[in-house]
Image 1: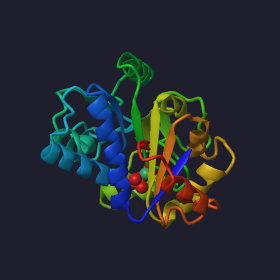
Image 2: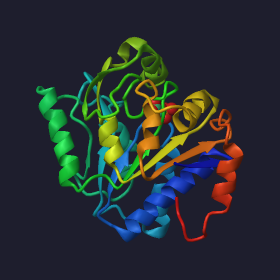
Image 3: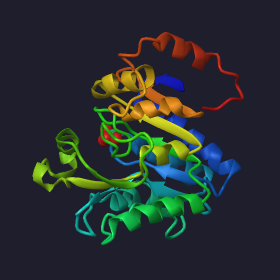
Length: 261
Ligand code: PGA
């Protein structure tokens, strides 16, 4: 995989946004894999700026979220459907219904998960999947021990993940759902380009294990090592535990000018 070490989250967000903009320019009907959490917010801000200033259009594009909580009220502002609407979908020109999230309100959960997989396939698969990483190495909501071949399904969040996300629920741990629907690791690996972003020292351990550790279910992000086109964009703090950081910098600095991430 390619590791890009940047000075700041803003610089990393700009690189990811540029990759999405280039994709949309060459393939206006691209299928984007969207992530939630704090990490990708700078990417969304950059895309909104490109939409407003440069006319970058999402009108023919489609999107699929990585995951969704189960058990929130349908109009809860922290459902990922609501978060994505607020952070990106409603700020650019996606067509109505072009961005889907797993149906966390479905009565028949297995059918909803199978339907989500089918919808991704019928859209032609995901061209570029944005990813964050949990401190425990989760991608999407695939917690440690998730099968590396898993597909969209219900998962139970670890206490650590619920504690990390309590900040979105007025620091009320009891308000953070225990269950989620998430694309599986196998689903994520089907996307044509994976772009994982990580900022801050609290991600340094997971980043180093994912990039340089062994591939294993206890470190879900290590599955990126199995992908043909995975880009990991990290700031200096998140890169702190990488043993080969100098080599990654050297590779990136010496890339052919025409080659994007
Ligand atoms: P964060 O979450 O972007 O809010 O740090 C990432 C994740 O848990 O996948």
